[in-house]
Length: 615
Ligand code: M6R
Image (cartoon, rainbow, N blue to C red):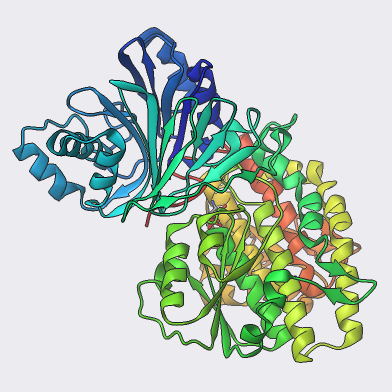
């Protein structure tokens, strides 16, 4: 859950590293650091805080010259996010320097042994232990850096993406990966190293993604050499052409990535169903499903595993799968599933949902399901991510890079893919009529245009946000398909504005949360015409009679709720099961505006990181 960047070539490494770290700040932003090789020295600058803080102090702390360097932006696991724990870390001799994303689980026992051999530690991190272990192996075995890294990594338990170089061999960087992502950009006589390709996209379109348990020795101006960490076998680099463009990873005039990503949803949803949906021919084509139709056909049940927003998309999918395809579905937090000894059989289909494709708990849940013979289907956004590679088959959401920590377009594109899958399985199983099926396809095609219309309500939503920005608690209510949207609305508000919020099925309110309602409690209610409308109206009346403030998301033209509510935001009419794609938009905008008005860091909320690669 950190970002790593490295460079070796002919250019000045510092600006490449700093800009790269800024693009990776979505991965962590507790502290940052850089190490540059220059004229026989390794110069290091580190600081708590963001990459901007590093930029502000680096020039006063060291020379910024050098064509070899590494940098790191951290989300703290071991040790406080202070200067001494910030990466890069030097070995005791000062010759080796390392950056690390991941966790070395057995670092304490290794540290004890190293201390007995005279090593001194200046931080609380597992990473400093690793660099000294490499140094110890290098000295003891009298081997080169690459070999020392390999031997050391065979002694550690945990996850890592590392880059390390040696002051006495400044034409080489060694990198290795297990569990955390690592991409190598291949330029002309130069190489870039990063947690994803965004730091080097303006320099090269060619990249190699290391597989788990692979390491690479990267020499200035030479070819990269890949090896398997376990048995030293040579591996062959598969150079991939990057699809990423610079525009997709910049703000393009928006004040925050989150707002940009909210506004990208019409486009992202269209990209996600493009090529998969043929409303005119009544067809849904999904290669990852078509090739494994038998597994889906024979499935006793579907188990969905995910975390956070992706778990909410899974809940929406549960309703759709059961409603349309009549397949029993269970939705599990990956973090619970992996540890609770669940019953899994080879007749189960497990669907793992993850924007980043790197979430540690989801990855572990997949491994567990596979070990019981289940067929695992992935729904990921990041191409080539660990989850995409670990699953038996899958379908990408084509949302484009999501950089704001709060998931927005990932949620709506996940629902889009899962709806297509449900429709496909329903058609296969004959549980949906041809006319219903075709209507649904036509309706999906209309969704991007309808999302655009919802986005037009942004000024109104901003006005509502102003009225509730100082609230300390909020309730979100929805029923049926929109119950998960209530959960998602509450999560968005919590994570970026630090206001306590709870999502509930509207009918559950009277079993407890109603006690909280008074004139200070804003209640956001999703009250679309097709979703148990009358029941939700009754819930609204119950809130009103207890003086709660009601902010309702309603279908265009609704008069009944407008009369009862303090504020309404309208969405266009759509089928009930597609309504989450529209109802979630005003809630995203609302959280965004409230967070901005409260002066919160919208794209980088405190204590969070975009991909949670630790347990
Ligand atoms: O990358 P993933 O979809 O696996 O991430 C799962 C959660 O960490 C993520 O959705 C998180 O809850 C977001 N910050 C929510 O906005």
